[in-house]
Length: 577
Image (cartoon, rainbow, N blue to C red; front, side, top):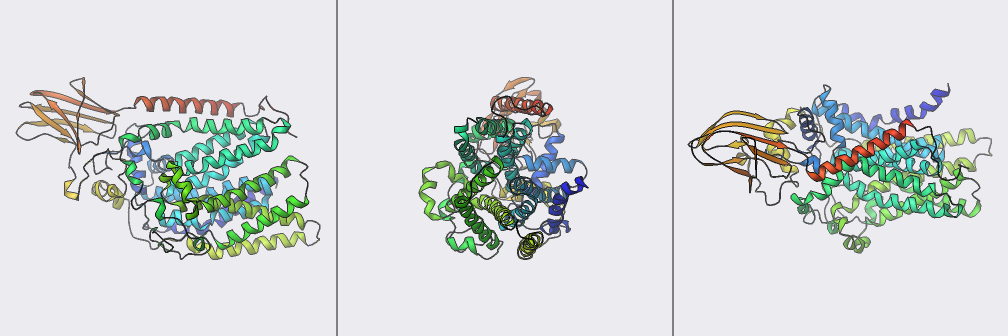
């Protein structure tokens, strides 16, 4: 019975999540802005089966020239999808599974955080408000940004781990904070960039509230979690940062994605038509940027409740104080995230160059949705406290929650639907022609600088190695995402072209001797002397990547050792009060 009481809220959240994932059970797929998801899952699977790990290069994207996409684009969701794909589901079904899994886990992780802060009833309510947030539907069923939606999933767990590690000196909470922060980084680098300043402010905020009591663990433990999370995810973010110079990713800043053109008008946060188009300058967009009327109203009630409580109450224990402090932090967080979406914040965007990578200020709806769900939970916790002395309390709170959840699902469930469903199969996304042309055109920002992209389908090379007929012929070839091996017979000194996008991780050997290729506008070339030769090419880890891999392994080792000894308390700091 006790076990059932513990799992009942989780089951309740999972059951009520059904309407958010229902369209994923339909056959076929639906149009999304980032229509590369199925292809990326498929290409990740091929690379894993070829023995790549960590996966950085895929052979078919990049117009058939190959593409180091997973060196730069956060790979976690695609690892998850590819593993499902390897176990027998096709790439399309695997993509749907990771979409649905991310949605459900967002509610579960929010429940874990808010039930700790506010209790089970408020926790369930917060979880469903987080899961049914309009921006969440926008991310999944319109934009198709599975990576960002997975980062959205991990955010509550990050704060749960940091909060509990600050006051309960057990390694497992540091581990939760570390692995969930690594999860955010490995899911979506822009979300990680967005949330990290908020995390650092959170740590500093708690430290300043407890430093007089010399409770150093409120600062040290969360900081350890963040550093450990950075170490675990280092295999991805360090190469992404330091090897970006080899790509054309800077081209994504400005143009149609200039942040100056995509600020949100205040009225759009309250109400804007639900659409399946794109973001445009001004107040009329093809997308809706509404926070949600219920989310805003309950956030306001949570804020007013916080003011009343602070004026009327003394904080006499840690748990009570932590609840109030986290709600303060969430109030500041929602106000700041809203501010950063409005044009009034443009001077800040212009003073911080890194913010240009966000492209769209409305991305901060992600954090607004998180903080509004927390404030909703706080309001219910406050209401429950105030009604505690009433005899009818046992009926009022369940009634209020039932009305809120019914209204939430009634109004927001319809947002979790695609514009239409198309009869498509895996082959519509993973056939060679689709991979090398239609999918490649959607996302090609990580191609080498100066790369001459094909202008039409006919310009795409049909094979990797090109030898002129009058100069020689290929006797044997073996190609995969990690290695290339050719045996050929050359009649005269020739220049052989390899249709591979240049990246420093590729190394080339002629008859076992390392050689340096010439970089072309759309591939590389090698000078070959007459005779029979072997050409061997291998995609290896660069020095930066080797260092980053070692750092991740070290972080993972520390993480595992900590888990093994998780029953031991950390020795520094005072005992928990």
